Length: 337
Image 1 (spheres, rainbow, N blue to C red):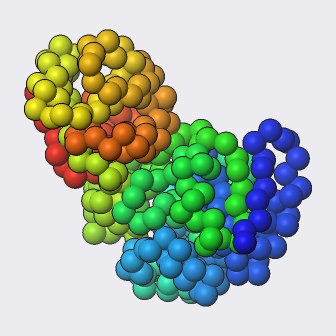
Image 2 (cartoon, rainbow, N blue to C red):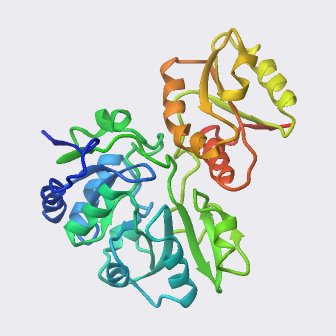
C-alpha cells in the first residue's frame, strides 16, 4: 500500500523530508516536475534503480537521466565537464534542460545502460527541486508512464498504473510545461539537440555559434523509442501553413471513418461540426498546446475512436518539440500539404 501526499495547495514542503527518506532507503516515489510526472529512486543505488525499470516495464538498454539539486551534485556524477557545458548549465539550470555528460564511476551502470555518459537535469519545479535537495542524492527519474505509453502530466492520469508499484505518491497538480525536457549533448564543442523541448534551438544558439539537431542520435544516452508516446488509438497528424487546406484535409480524412476524433486548435473548433473534437489550445499560444498534448491524447483514447486526427503546428520554437511528440504519437503517420 502506497502513502499519499497532496501538495497542490500549500507552500509547506516539510512533508518532502519524509519522502526523501523513502528515496534514501531504496524506495520508489511518484512525483511531479515542471515537465511531466516522474518515477524516482536513488540514482546511486543499483537495486533501487532496477525497481524503476520493473515498474515501468522499461527495457534495461534504455538509460535513465538523473535529477540533481546543485552543481556540486553535478560534479559528483559527471567529470571532464567542458567550458561550454558549464555555460549551458549556467544558462538553463534549473529548468527543463538535460545535458549529457561524461559519467563518474559512482553512477551505476544500470543508470546508463553500461554507457560512459549520463543525462543530468536540475529541475525548477519546487517539489522536485526540494525532493532532490532533501534526499541528498541524485534521483533517477524517467517520466512516469508505462513504457511505450503516454507520459503523465496529471496525477490522475498515472496513479492507477503505479499505485501498487510505488512506496509514496505525491499529487502536485498538473505539470506546468507538459512535455519532457530538451536533451543536449556537446560534441566537438557543438551542442547537439537529441530531443527537442521547451528550451529551444534559438535559445541554445545564444550560447553557441552553431546547434545541430540530432533527434534520437546514436550518441544519446536516453534514446526515445518511436513508440514512447503512443496512445492506444491509431492517429494521423496533418499540417499546412494554409489553415483552410489543413482543415479541409482533416475533414476529408474524418469522412472516411465512422468514429473519428479530432484534436483541434481552439480557433478551428467550429470547422469540425458533427465530429468528436478536443480543444488542444490556441495556435497563438504553443506553450498551452504543449501542456495539453498528453492529456488530450489520453482523452481521445477514452472515446475509443477508429482514428484520431491531429492538427499540427509550425515547427519553430517549442513547436518543434510539439511536432516531435505528435509524430511519435502518430508513428510517423503524417500528412503535410
